[in-house]
Image (cartoon, rainbow, N blue to C red; front, side):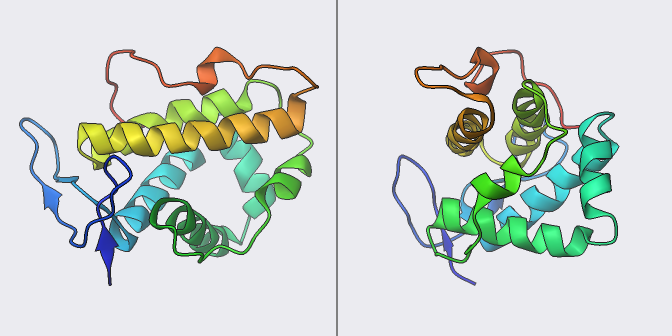
Length: 166
């Protein structure tokens, strides 16, 4: 399995988790297929427990969680490793989700950010989060935006105190 470092736009071979001072587990220095798999499964484990988003995902994915997790792994591989693995169309898929409300993309990021911060070293986590925020902004605009609309501030990186994942 080939892994690439995803720091400042550079991609360098090699992947290894590193121990962070006081961390409860090791953090990845690089984005790799392995770290993406851990990120996706950890994140969706948290989503399943979330009072609002968990219900939405469970209604949509009951009996199909493994299929969705595999699809999300290929999506994030395409985004972060630029390997072209994902062939889906996220905007139409999200437009079908009629139960989504204006704040749901911000809530999604509230769950996503701490997961990524726990899994990756800080600079890399910030880069992955910024990519996720651009995706959330794009999906929010496609779902709720009108011409000239600006996405809400909760869809941009915050400097809030670090929180642990779910």
